[in-house]
Length: 397
Ligand SMILES: Cc1ncc(COP(=O)(O)O)c(C=O)c1O
Picture 1 (spheres, rainbow, N blue to C red):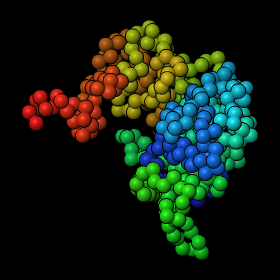
Picture 2: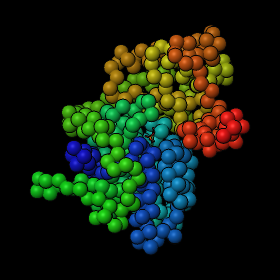
Picture 3: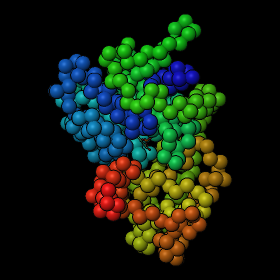
Picture 4: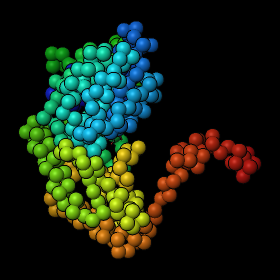
């Protein structure tokens, strides 16, 4: 199944090999950062090539994992078409370029049609190109990363391939690359020859970055994704892609009728594909109600709260719902009706929104502490490390 899943993703992307070890999209971006590092180190160019280029609307895990792998990060800002101008990339590439890590469509739903020229520019400078395919639904079966020239890409099996997204995982970041990068990617890999399968582990791949996580990764999720891909087939996947774009555009038309809500960057005319970023800045200005309040109130009506935006926010009070292809139109309409209702409440009775949720097992959670590491610890061991003195005072040991 692992081998079959890799083959199907190779078909969809044009890459030569996939590995499923990464525990999510950000982890797969990290796989790319360390694979890029191993590639340049092997060629004796790592000291010289220490820069990774990304864009402000590419998911920040790309910049973060490049930095974690020791690279300096260059972030390109948006131009008037909704993506950075080609000249900005021309100015950024040099003999120091190790690679580019980019998402397309980006996190506002805008597709950069110059992407092939971008890849060529980075290649001409000697860098590698990585396609963050988290936003794959709108383009799946319409383009292949390798044909655009990319050396590597990642898919999120929990975002596109039917493994559940919500609840914090478990997830899978499927990382795929060209034959030239294959020696460096994590191991083990499944090899197939003459109808039988074998394992290629680290001892047979001396240039491999080794493991980034446990052995196979989250196998049950791969089984779900494998089943989904086999049952959809090529035609089904193409249809799902069309449907995700149609659903998003349907939602966009209705959502823009809600007072207080606007599309992000209204002056940009590029069409949004499978998701659209909106701003509730006007509603917040008029009523004092924030996007966090809106999220908390929406769950009272039994729907998922909308995703907001990655940091840094480029528009005030952002929300970025993703219709996807699996919701029937009745569910889309209900979700839109809920948001319209909550926005109306914000104008007529803001307190009911600000004090939400009202029908959940827990009340609103104070999110401000997340920016104060002294205030939290994710494990008991981390708590003891941070607050050892206080614990001793209280318990005497
Ligand atoms: C474009 C993009 N890249 C990467 C990620 C990170 O994926 P994960 O949350 O699985 O680590 C996300 C998350 O939604 C994303 O939208």
